[in-house]
Length: 342
Image 1 (cartoon, rainbow, N blue to C red):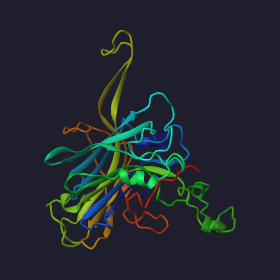
Image 2: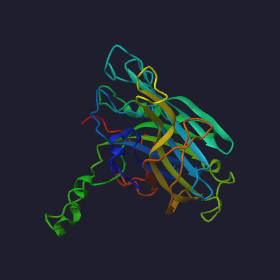
Image 3: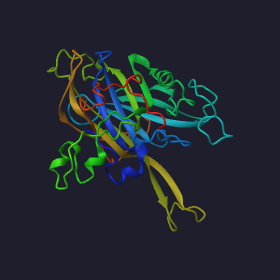
Image 4: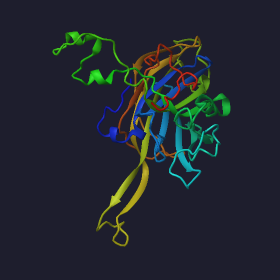
């Protein structure tokens, strides 16, 4: 299930807007599953000088249910931090960016990955670098090498990437919201025009993707690879979410007010956006089925404890719905690159 800027409230908060979640058996390694959650819909490639990035105050979470009860048994939590390398300029870069440590790159973003399961919370990666935005041929002359450098290997055969990608979803937003004037059938519309092919509104727009490749046996309920699609451990429910900490603003007369000033308190994270996956059967042959959809529950702020959270929206994964130039969905940067400036 895909949705881009559909809810009035979350459309005001794009860094927490989860547009899609995808989950599928990895084509390059059938013993693993690839999970992708996308955020920041409809990024224009020419986004300077303040190029797009993940929210430093947002908790991004991938949830996995492996026993069919609609409650996450395993979760991957992602938190981001931006760093200013050159405080003497407002520019994103002052020359070509040729590596993730290039001094010409002024503002960078790093992230931490935490896995939470029944054993507790474990940091599986920290200080991981995101690639820069795909600015253009002079600023990012070899963008694919930068994206490849941002693919990080974690412990236990896990691989992760977080950064800007071309939005792979096909949708003709212009015609859909022009009184449902779908181009292939617009000759039948109450205001008819000659039928034409649909237009992919997102073809030149980007999103920010979190992609992780995980061994299937580390996600199943019994810790083993499924022997077939009907195996009891072959079904996983997967969804993604974005959360913010609760904020309390106190006014005059409040017992927490100090020296006549308004004060703010930061508490447990509040769910802003979620995209749920279809339940799917991991097959040893490297394919997936997704007969039923599911959605659920809460997340923490990068800690073993899980305070109460509330959700703002949800996104569902459809493993076979990603249609981009006829390719199967994949997280590999070589297959879905970020669009550069127009």
